[in-house]
Image 1 (cartoon, rainbow, N blue to C red):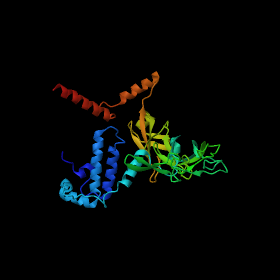
Image 2 (image 1 turned 90 degrees about the horizontal axis):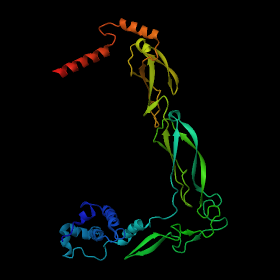
Image 3 (image 1 turned 135 degrees about the horizontal axis):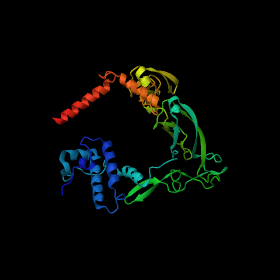
Image 4 (image 1 turned 30 degrees about the vertical axis):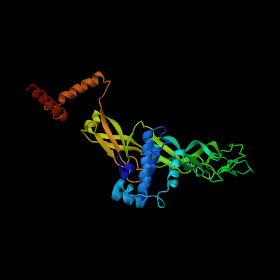
Length: 370
């Protein structure tokens, strides 16, 4: 069976750089390695094919011969061997480090934490500093985060000589991985702190002040550097991410930097005009309603919305007026409305929208009869 093109095997172009070849090989080798695919004959064959392709393309002399003569170069001795060939020790050391967990070295940074914070719309618009209580792991105060009892010392791990890494034989490869005795720390605690039991960290609830900037919205995050869990001895702590959720408001709805609200008005004010006191987050303001205002008319109050969290012009408050039909009328009020209705002219000039709608509806029914 004819061999596949080596560039195709590694999934790279013919002008790929040495770094691209190496990167592709690592990815493909990890995918098909027998230790990751036990008993899979197809994966085993693919692994051999990938290894052979890398062995040729990673060597400039062999690659040049392959580019000129293809697989037939091997028949003419063009691929050769000996010095100058690929060194698989470093490559497979990296691969087995990923497969078997050998990539861990040195003390590990503390974990990041998330805190869900629900705030009012007013706090989101104007900003506020709030206190929160966060359960977390902090450095043990008794041993100062060392994990060792006061007066004692951690000793160098004898298995890895303090390096945190050991070499192990995996088939015909020698690989480097995290020392199982000290877990990559290079030190062993034989006399642990009685408070934290050698873990160097203890559970504690921290009280923190969070400054909420004006303009935040649901989904925004505030990062507090170094306020996450404490790291292992000698490592940095993680960060705390405060996740913002803004509670719904009884009067206003938010749309980005704009606010929306509905303002009910009587049909008398809608017909004759008037002035209303409407609420805003900044206080009451006068809203002038012109005569003959129709329901769902929107009035814009500039600058009464939300300031952008990253700076810029403040949004607006959009007031939509809704004409309210009176209810629970007395007999006298109903009589007055009937008298008012009789004063309306027969040509519907007082109700142009109704007149236009009924004319369109009439035409619609006439067209249906045709």
